[in-house]
Amino acid sequence: MRQSPALTSIFAIPLLLLFLFPSSNAHNITQILAQHPEFSTFNHYLTITHLASEINRRLTITVLAVDNAAMSSLLSKHLSVYTIKNVLSLHVLVDYFGSKKLHQITNGSALTSSMFQATGSAAGSSGYVNVTDLKGGKVGFGAEDSNGNLDAVYVKSVKEIPYNISVLQISQVLTSTEAEAPTPGPGQLNLTAILSKQGCKAFADLLIASGADTTFQENIDGGLTVFCPTDTVINGFMPKYKNLTAPQKISLLLYHGIPVYQSIQMLKSNNGIINTLATDGANKYDFNIQNDGEEVTLKTKVVTAKLTGTLKDEEPLVVYKVDKVLLPRELFKVAPTTKAEAPKAAKEAAAATPAADSPEGDDVGNQTADNNGASGLDGGRLIMVILSFCVGFLAL
Image (cartoon, rainbow, N blue to C red; front, side):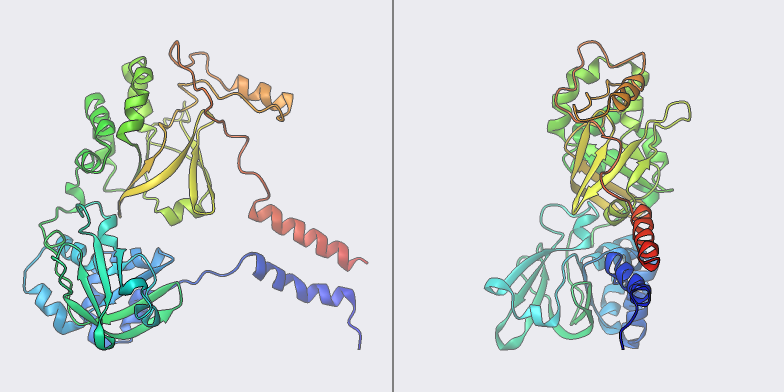
């Protein structure tokens, strides 16, 4: 029996939408471990340190779980909850290691980054974990700063969702002098100290000299995202910075902060215009977040900057490195429009340039402007196109 085109298209619509918008492989580490009572203590501390929520929002992760007996040895050290968080962060690898992959490591050993490395508290290579395929089918694990000691061995696989999350049991807690060092609570975090330690000292010095550091510091507890130009970038920008007035300097620096916590996954999924610490209602001081695959860019209509690394990612604070100083259109000349742009759009861009442009002698050179947002169709428009096509097809 031959099906009508209309009936076929009706069944094709949901299949097409599923293809275009695949469901995410969401996981919940708390629920996974709740099925195994021997990990109840480990599970409890993942929750109270907020590591569980950080694990759940990451797309590719490996959790090295330890049983209640192993957790007892850690708790006997009477560490603060913030220090315990650092220790447990060392047990969360930002790569996928299933039980099969453990025995297929190139050259028998791999050095992989942990979430402790992402906190910004790990100096040097102390946030890395050594995974080594040993003789007799055993696999050893050890913190890189433990003098080459492999403190723990692989026990069993607890749960694997390939290339999304792997939960493996290891025999004992990994030891690390750096991870077990006393750690201040979030309210005691010193942003400028973190920046100075991680290659952004020049930017930190500008925050302190201008007094803008107070605004940044006051926003940490409620959530803060900082985009930090590296020392080399700041040093090259200083001639222009010195031409700004004191209020303009503060606005420029505050423009590098967002008063909410935005993980890298959140930045990739929430493209669009976002306000900054400099936004005051009268002046927008906003910019556009866009991504292309793994690359995240910040477009200000004056300059386009790329995220080049993460200095610290520990809710409520995340700090990213950027390859350019973010220049707001309220202070600097809007970059020239492309020849392909319509004359009307070019006039509107010119009209958007404030009367008080950048300081005399400022030249944005080849810094590119935002060409009216992301190219292509967004999700809503794409669905409308699909539905219009299907309605037209039904009418045949």
